[in-house]
Amino acid sequence: MTRLALGDEMLERKLYARLLQWKSQKRRKALCISGARQVGKTTLIRQFGKEQYKHFVEINFLNDPLSKTIFSGSLRPQELLANLTAYVRQPLEIGNTLIFLDEIQECPQARVAIKFLVEDGRFDYIESGSLLGVSTKSVPSLPVGFEEPVTMYPLDFEEFCWANGVQKKTIELLHDAYLNKRPVSELIHETMKKLFYSYLVVGGMPEAVNIFVSTNDIVQVISFQREILALYRQDIVKYSTQNSNKIHRIFDAIPGQLDEKNRRFTLSSLEKNARQNRYESSFLWLNDAGVALACYNVTQPTIPLKLNEKHNLFKLYLCDTGLLTAACAQNIQFALLNGDVSVNWGSILENAVAQQLLANGFPLRYFNSIRHGEVDFVVEKNGKVLPVEVKSGKSFKLHAALNNVLDVKDWGISEAVVLCQGNVDSDERILYLPWYMVMFLKADQLPSQWLHRVDIGALAV
Image (cartoon, rainbow, N blue to C red; front, side):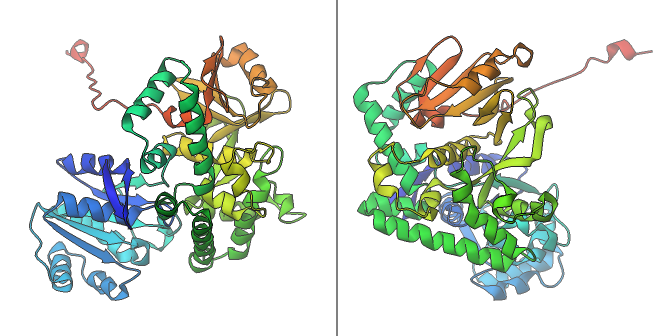
């Protein structure tokens, strides 16, 4: 992790450690970093390149369309690198040069060339783009096996806390309380809740966070967020080859759909006789572009959840909770910042939790059935299904659907989490955590090394 210069402030991003890990590998593929616009990809990569390499070359295909000519001819590494050197007019030292290809969706042929450049092995390469998930069809031949994909998200809540001056020791204290299921002091608890209210409004777009930290001016934050929403609408027109009208309607409908009782996206709100197959590609476009986050229903909460997904039933969140509040018809920011729970803010709270779970490595899924009711999220943790319920009100210990799920013995679910306004608490089956502690709920990681050998001695003849 490192601090990134942004205006007069510095933002610390966890993904920097991932870049260091990639650089330490002996046989490096090209790192391909995707994510929605304005999440901080270019700033992070630029800082990494300048700090970790003697020579750093940056080519932006959107700002410099002429740079596409580097890849317009032969894709032989010798000719490509000769063209590149002539174009950038700066030294390239073997083994100590990072070449950054930004907005690579604007130059499909550069994506094809990555295979040959990686095979050549003289330099390191990072690609980045905001709409890579929706532009793959324009690439003649994807460099499968030569790219290492990484997704970057807006600042999560822990990163937001760092930006606002919360000390690492405080985060460690909170993490210890989470692990040991022990309440924190009321002073810390109330302060962290206020920070979380701020996160609901400001969100995690780096420039929005920078504006908030440096000025505390929510009006400026909202103005910038609305600029991002306008940019996303422009991208829909520019990059969606078809169905741009449908994509626009879905995008604009997300805040209203999340405000419904069950949050589930219903096509009838867009068109009376709308059919799933007519809109499926439009939903996928928003999800693949990183603008929206799809959360799919599962038929039953059992391992593996992936096999139980129903893609015709889903909830659709925005990629950033701050953008969601800015997109809402009413000006609810003042009430949220003051913790006014009389505001119908359950959808915004749920969006923030979805955003954090995804950043922590969990695919987004929920469970809903007529018989058992609805559970906001279900994730796989320690080889088991863990239901996660998000409560916005004071009666957070009333959760009929969660109890129904826990009572089904065939599903074997022994524990659940309720995210609420209260302090840490637990009973036999349910762990109650304050909303802000969702930052500690992380997906299982593979060990750094997992050796396995089969003894075939018994097969000797």
